[in-house]
Length: 539
Image 1 (tube, helix red, strand yellow):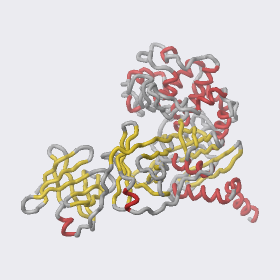
Image 2: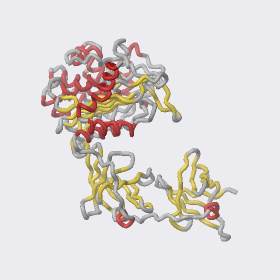
Image 3: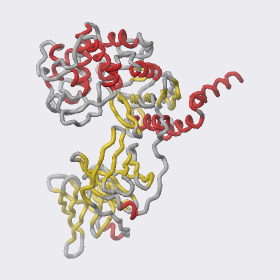
Image 4: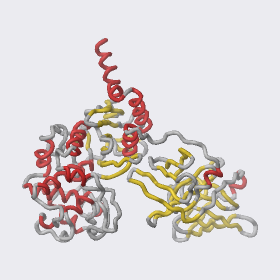
């Protein structure tokens, strides 16, 4: 009994000992703030300079029986699969078995509409192809998997293009399905077998593969979705459909092996490793944020090479920081954790000694109002406006997010790890530091603060009612307690009075201006969000 107890204690604390208890506890706090109690979980590994820093698991792999997620569990990794597909293409290019500039029609017999798309454009998501929902024949319930993916290639190429190949960027699962098929044509073997021979076996990745061809490579965590506030087992999906765009199952340990081998030049020549770590650019010079199978991002000023994944029941994130040689992977058994990048990024920043701010400071209303304005970057506009003593951040007609002051010239954006940083003493421009990189925004116009008025119950009741927009919708103004709400269908938003008969939505950029008749009764409403709507009050 005593021996077992010691084993449990050592096992529980071992991940913390690897990097010191302080850092371990900080990671635990980050995870516990992220995960819901008694729900699906996440497994995490972090390495630096070829050494393991941290490995642990949290939450439940099976909610019904209380089984816990383990650090060596297998997970569907979704679009992280694209790294392997891209590496296979690059390996074949290095062996002169194909060229990245080749048109894909060279490898797809009798294909039409393919002559202007190159292999490189598929890798970089600049082909103009869309996703499964863009192809009428791509129906999960009826697609013939016996001749897949060959039977879906032409319907993919027949689907409407988003733009001319090479002129823009649009993430495309379809493009990577075609790449998998090209690998089969060039190697004369199934895509799944080629990956096994080329990568998994040489690297000792014994727990990576495709569940639809290998019974020993199955996800042993149940995958969940969040449905109406409750966790339910995810809708089943034959992972053959995800194929070379997202069909792999893997483990923390195997993904660490993979990243080490790739970044050390053991999978591809160093020249390719350099290309993997640099974003592609469009003809107009704009960066796409994607290289050759990897996404390029930024954490606290450090460049990241990363990829995320989501597929029925699972989400995943793998982040590599070349400058610090830090690798962090988070694997989850719920497709509800679509923001898993935030979790992985916070852990990565902590281990890189550049943690994201967690403490806010207090700025006065006058101080906040100095930052107000409309700011422009590359013809995009964002608005910063004070709402009483809170600075809000939003696009015209869009959702409002609270800006959280972290120092006198910097703000965190609520619900994200993005930060806005002004130069000291200069409120005319700011730098947006996001996980995708940095952008510079210039102020083009000053805006006015919203100072909200407190209205008594009698005054609030004057606005309550139904307002009809002809041939469009009915807008309800509802009073709940001492608050007013505007509602269209099931969409309800709180509204606040900032001037006589003028209101704005608290969390959406919507304005309401009420009009009265000669007797002072509210009879009409002008509602403005993406455009203005006039609504007459219904009796």
